[in-house]
Amino acid sequence: MTKTLLINISNKNSLHSWWTEKRGFKKEFVFSYTPDEFEGYLEEAGFRAVYRRGVGLVTPISLFRGFKGKFIPVWFAREVNKLLDTYATKRSHLYYVEAEKVRE
Image (cartoon, rainbow, N blue to C red):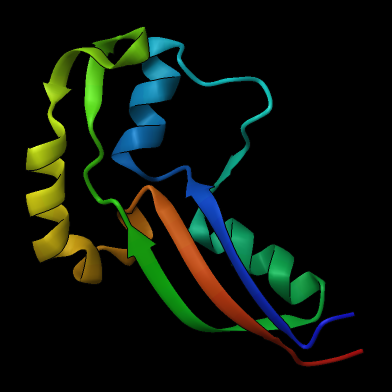
């Protein structure tokens, strides 16, 4: 088994997750977890998170499938994320974690 784990999840607490769920865009093979749930699973597996980062506090959102009828355009999401991703780790679309093994 590895001693270091680099992984990200789709964050259930994000705007993106809320929107895809509300609009019925979420595919059945996509599973979302909260950062706390995910870190609980890591601990159960014997890992401890040593670094966390949120990516995509605001994601492009469309009214229709295939990104048609953009409600939040890419340029706007990009600008907001430059400013706020660092501060909104547990609310971003992707929750990235670097974890180290603490027990065998």
